Length: 62
Image (cartoon, rainbow, N blue to C red; front, side):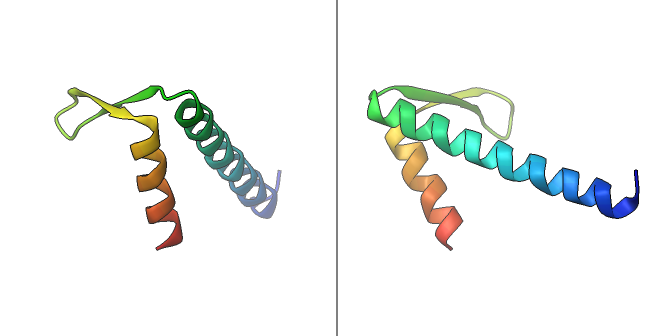
């Protein structure tokens, strides 16, 4: 596998992961569910999926 093919594969995987994450946020937000994230100290942090989706979209559009 050439270096170009490796870079293309990594790019494709990253796009797929981002799309999957966005789909998860949208699905959970529609169901009024929560997401669990780890804070900077590794402690769990529970956030509404709607809040997480809004934050994700703000970062993506910035």
